[in-house]
Length: 411
Ligand code: ASP
Ligand code: MG
Image (tube, rainbow, N blue to C red):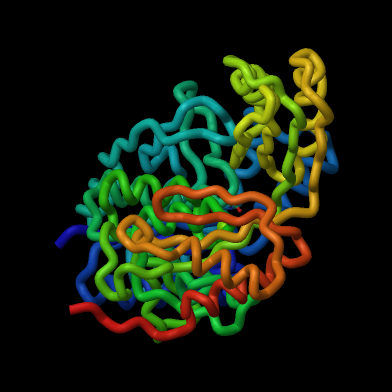
């Protein structure tokens, strides 16, 4: 039987009582004959507290020692969980990322996993040890600690599952699974049985924060099914992220995502000639400002308006970079709108079905919600709306696409 990789997030390990409860869950699975590799995140809000400590010392929040500091959080949970398992009579061993053979590049705080050498893990499994691994961390080519970016332990778990040929990666958290939308915004949100990797990626990229997008990418690449489930609520079955959805009706919108962290930059009256977009977006890329959606209108008398969105935190930087470029190009004013949000519907059914856009825009119009910009991918339609109307827009779309209705199982 292939091994199973489990990952427990910070809320599932918030104190020693929770750690003992997690140890019991793991013990039960091992007693049933399964081989388990367990990836852990730092306890509760530990990572935030470590960041707070660093800030009390210095404004510099990057580099070798910063990664080393953040990596300590996961090591505390690995050791405590292994101790709890031993106390239950189960031989367990705690490993750092490096000890587990997780190698990364040398970008200390946004490292990418380059290779996993599973020799040590296999050796420990062969000795009937339950292997507990510190997530979120790895080892650089210089044998330094690296971390994978906030939320990165999901990525550790899926990468390890791929390296070990695991049956699936199970991600345990404090929610019951993936919902049709955020239940705090719409109480009628429904938990999905399953969802396709591409749909989950779009939802995560458009604001649904259940899982680290890179973990989903890795799942897709290696075809590792990912179960998202609650570690608190053992009776609920969770949501399976996989290649093709079999439990939910096809040809349907799967979820509505909200990203309220958006600002739009509009460059007015841009001359319509080759190379203009390259100059504006080249300057933003050089300054490391990620640009999200881009819309350019057809030109009227050789002039066009260009609008792009950035994360809310980046709007000042985006303005400072765009203004001089716009002036040099001889375009008009640069206008910022920072009270915006993106509301998206996502579903692979859109590739073959018709009428999704019409239903979406009609529903928003009926609710008198103005759409400022529209962008699409093959399986997503996104409307930019004012921030104060955004939550209402989510509820309106959830209703319009009948997402509260239980799925009929396909045959
Ligand atoms: N402990 C890290 C964080 O809080 C990694 C994780 O939770 O996945 O970002
Ligand atoms: Mg976390």
